[in-house]
Length: 304
Image (tube, rainbow, N blue to C red; front, side, top):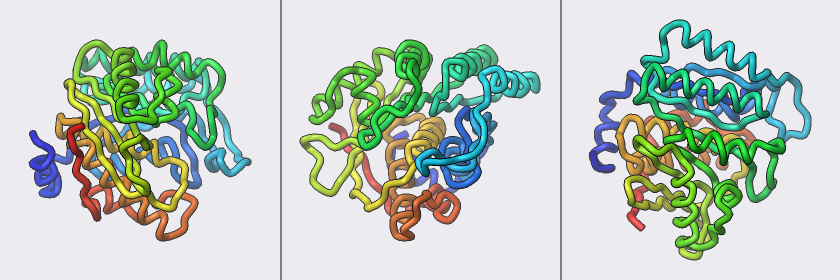
């Protein structure tokens, strides 16, 4: 299905039910990061989400102080196994993961991916390899970068790194479009060796990106496509978690990374535009929820 046809089909409201996604991420009560950023958009689009939380915090750590606790890998694994005991994994379409707090959480994630694939070999694993960002540097614990490179990505069908993360994982600079493509190909070579593998590279500005714009680049089946959107005066946590969830949803529904890039990119731009207009420190996941269903502005990806 071509991207334009998918956009029309999606706006008509056909086929938006039936997806089941196991999402293993952090949780905050105030604001929207991790599962608190990913779950509601997926539900608003019609997916059933089985959320497994790796932490429960009052708010994200960017505020400098927070309350709550980190769950152990054993606790996460117990919840996953409890869902599996219901026979649910035979109907699970995908596993989605983001920030990994420690090695034991990593083990629990791979246990979950293995359990789902044994029940449904067609299920996809979408790994958002969270390591850090250009303005913060690395903010995960020592060993997590190695876990993602050596264990998580080799199990993943879909990866959604930002520029900072893909440069660390591959050792290839992305200041040019050629370099970004080479980094994506290198990352692709690290991933699951069967099934519909695709990469989404976010937060990209290269030698071909005009001033005042930001790019996202996707690769699937030997083809690269670029989506360019205007920059917005906003800096919030949780946008990466939302774009990974939206891209996974639309890739599952359309079977096309290009259609997923267009739909997810348009929604996230609308969400951030609304957030910027409100001057909010937290993304307006609930107030701007119509952007997930009917984006206020549709962007088109181009082959590159």
